[in-house]
Image 1 (tube, helix red, strand yellow):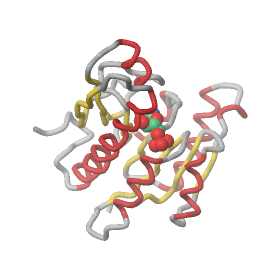
Image 2 (cartoon, helix red, strand yellow):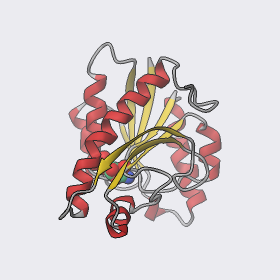
Image 3 (tube, protein in one colour):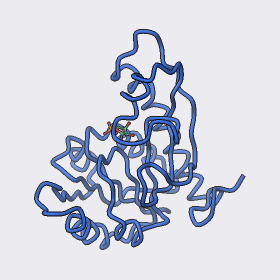
Length: 197
Ligand code: GRF
């Protein structure tokens, strides 16, 4: 049973989908704690699903490194098998990546390496592409630059706004996240190397 700590910054709709998957006794992972870098709406899921939460407000720290030290101190007691960034809108400091890596994955609403960073959906729309995608990657020290574990194309439709496009991407993101965690739990994806074929 993989024990997961999930970090969010927003509504947590991807986290909710993962929590619902873990309600199935057959699913080999469970969320043991939910963390956020701000007073995120998604923390309410901790109440709803009776899961402990913690908040390490980025704004309360003088540096990313200091924030990272407190974040690591809040994650460490849970001894997660896997740290899942699901809508965390912060870069993890290298010290956090090295402490919990390679068991850190992230979901991104674009077909990496296309459109990395905090505005992947808006950037795809602005670029006028006819398709974008969703990706799940292993987190390294870069910005959405780690090895790709799963990804799938999502069409951009005429008249799409950032929110209609993001709403089309998110269900794909959730399905890829849930499947990737399953693959990690059953060993078909090895985070220590590149994903097995
Ligand atoms: C997701 O698309 C995530 O990949 C991106 O922001 C969105 C978060 O959505 N970083 P939610 O908080 O899971 O609803």
